[in-house]
Amino acid sequence: MVQVMEVPRVDRQAAALIDHTTGIQADQVHAWFDRLHALRGISMSIAERKITAIIGPSGCGKSTFLRCLNRMHELVPGARVSGKVVMDGQDIYTPGVDPVQVRRRVGMVFQKPNPFPTMSIYENVAAGLTLAGEGDRRRRDEVVEQSLRAAALWDEVKDRLHKPGTSLSGGQQQRLCIARALAVSPEVLLMDEPASALDPASTLRIEELARELAKDITIVIVTHNMQQAARVSDFTGFFLDGQLIEFGATNDIFTRPQDRRTEDYITGRFG
Image (cartoon, rainbow, N blue to C red):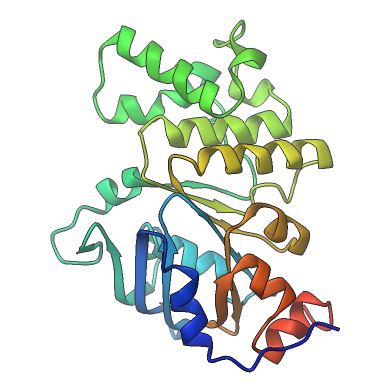
């Protein structure tokens, strides 16, 4: 049985990030779907160029929190957010902040690979550049290649860039979606269960890719897979019923949880 340490949670949260620059600071974030209060006062510091995992049972608010970090939650009819999400000293919910620009800085990869079905591999990666009005073909070619290389996909698709994105395997499609997100040079990459629909070999590729990408960008990953969270993340937050129960260095969360609910979840007693 995991032994629970009698140390105040706030102290360990502060200690976990003491040597790392904060990439995002969430401060008392609440979120609603109409009358449903989905998130209840989430405050946490997400370290820059590290991987932070969000774990917890279904319906606990993990994905909702992720979507609050790039203002995608507000796209749902009837949804709203209160509190602050601060990047580079600015609250992204301040009136006048362009949510489209926020989503360029904070990219997202979803649970199910979603390449644009009518676009080629090349066009999928270049989609963000097209929206931004980038017309220089040489520049587009460079960014597409760089993004596919960063997503560990270039060698597999370089000879068929004009084939449909949907012609790729599931794991390749997910890496294509990662390349598409990387093409607009995000500072943060949000990954919502990115390997849940993939086979073990593809899952390993995504995990290895996340570790490599974290050398340059901040990553937040939602996962139900305890082993995956333990393998890939530097920090872990445990959510339950819309609340952040515990947050700290991943090794501490999995070997010395401070809250009994965290221990019960990671040892499989519920969830």
